Length: 601
Image (cartoon, rainbow, N blue to C red; front, side, top):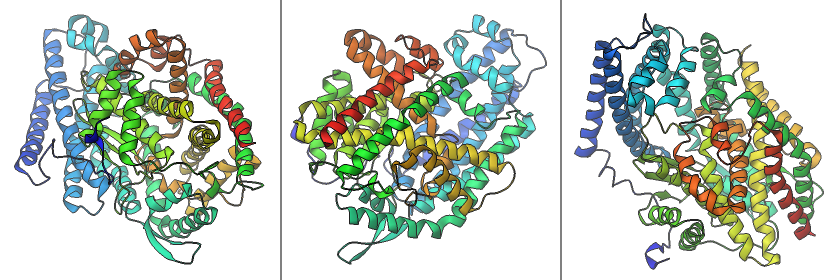
């Protein structure tokens, strides 16, 4: 890598290539242009009577209207995506930015108008002869998978008036509660009493980062600070969570879904047989993960782990990774797969796509969002350890996925969450395996531990969150749940999956308050497990036949919004409805557990 990547301070992302500033003329013109285009699109929908048709007949007028409206809708969606990405970059890194918050609210209104048109489009397509439309329109043929999905969605629609009302109420309903959660939790500060007696008031993202501190007293102090702080927010957070899940239960019932999980399965292009097979294999692996936790406890000199030990570093203290070292290492390792992947990573570092510094007002965690064409922006909270390096590689995998989706239309690139983790898991695995390959035995333990910490979180801990959310949806059908009931339900789920390998009196009852996914989506949890294990299986295919894999991988990534998950997996000879596939992916994890046990001894 060249010295141009070297950076002594952690970077903030550069949004100026999109627009000079929130108050700039360029942004205002783009914003007003989208509003005008949405208004014009609404007029076109009315002129073509886009709503549930009285006849399934597809004539020349229908074909012409379809081709025109799909082209215009795709264009508006691309431009809205760019505006949203730009504004969201400010909201997520500075919760106090009132100008960005105001613009986000205006964008939500535009999104409501587009959502209403989308529901009308679904009703329209659902009533047409799809086979005839596809036969007569090249545009329809290019979007065949999405159109057939729309037919399924149409069967679960309310009336046009009801769907219109639901979309209109969303910003002041589930959208408002989600926004409240993000704004409140990104500003929360906690007082940490360190072992030397000093007290520091830190952003929650920084407090949670102390879970990786080598000093057990510091980790416990951070945990105690969390447990003292989250209860002060439990009333508004419980209200938000109850409202969001209650809202969704009401819509599910009106749309004819008797199970809260069914809409999420449809949205992820996955059937129940696939989910059941994956979760059966995961449940079988819990005893193996408990073995790992007991081995980790022994390395820490403990009989049993407390919550604050789950992310504790083990082995020799890991090296501190500077930002320029991180950039160079990731780009070099990505180059072992392909120049295209390495070029994407180098571009992301050089063009400052990444916001890495933890700070007050910035959202916790990490994400990658596509902003325009093949450009993305990545948020991480970098803490200079190998886990942070792996997180950067993971999010760059999402950016690589976006590169491969760039030539698709918005309707074609609507990748479900489960498949969205494919490239990220693959890229994270490349970096982790490279680190293991170059490290001597006495330095491998912390690397294996970091990998297993991720696997434990995604296979085991996330399953506890799935069990919690299932019970939340069920309980919310009867009434609102108190904060205490939410805490109890979550710790019950944690005990079920952790068994006796984690101290049952030292769990984390407030994960429902801190995890943003509960507030922005439904059943976000199992798609992460799917992504990890599916990506692991794909990596095994790559190692078995690199040339064959490279010839089809980018095309698979570009088609994740155009096929069912089972059809995409079949391209590499994978049957995701078979428990054996998921077991084979988990066997890779079991091998790492055995390695960890050997190194820990």
